Amino acid sequence: MEHTPEPAHAPDHAVSDHDAHHINTHVKGYVMVGLLLGFCTMLTVGLSYVNFGTASMNIIVAMALATFKVGCVAAIFMHLKSEKWTIYRILLITVLFAIGLFALTGLAFHDPIRL
Image (tube, rainbow, N blue to C red; front, top):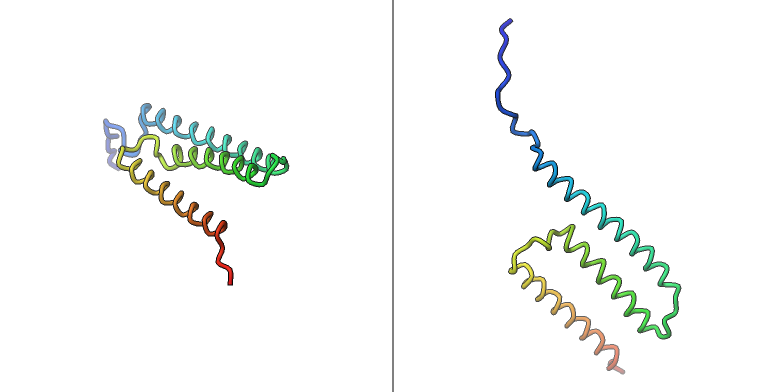
C-alpha cells in the first residue's frame, strides 16, 4: 500500500479564525435581536391590556412598538444596516407608498359611500 502525504495547505472548507469571529459576531447579533423581539412581543401583549384613554391612542402605541420591531428585523435579519444608499431610496419609496395607502384607507373611513 502506497502512502500519500497530507497536503501542506488547509482544505478549502476550513474556517479561518477571522471568519469564525465574523460568524460569531453575526450569531450574537441575531440572538440579541431575537431576544429583543421576544421581549417586545411580550410587551405588546401586556400593553394590549392597558387602556390609554382612546382606541386611537392604543393603536398609536401598538403601531409605534410594531415599527420598532420591524426596524430591528430589517436592520439585522435583512442586513439593511450594511446596505448602500440605493436600497434606502427604494425602502423610502416603499414606506411612502404604504403611508399613502394607509391615508387612502383612512379617508375612505371618514367619507363612506352611502347608498
